[in-house]
Image (cartoon, rainbow, N blue to C red; front, side, top):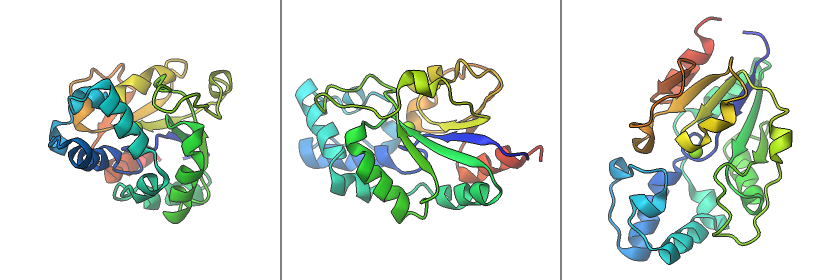
Length: 204
Ligand SMILES: [Mg+2]
């Protein structure tokens, strides 16, 4: 394939964030929700937390040591490096706030992803748990970016693809997106990075 621009979400595409949150919710609040039962992208709802507990959960989940501890999703780094080696352009567009940028950058560097760019975009309007959080990618600048492929797990982020009708979106299959309607036939459900790779290379 010719040089392609590829959007990759961070949490639950590159790393197993929600799985880590199941352990944090158990440790902090004694909430035992098996990963397969994390049915809602909204973790307050999935773990049945009060507003205060949810804020505590999110603060814990965004601490440096916690962010650095997330397990890589199998195959992510290998496939992304293969794409970069072939001349494709990979950008990580995360909904994490800019306050998590340095730790997120460090995680990428430690997982052999030094060559990807990282942007924090306010995908979820989720700025309550870290007061005055900022995002380093403004919406108007995001909308000037063009992508050929996107890899995303959150149905709440699909709206960020509305302006790109030719985009092919690989929806990383997760318990919280299984009931979501995929917005168009340019959306493909993928179970793992092997399937994402096959989809990326299928016509090339
Ligand atoms: Mg995600």
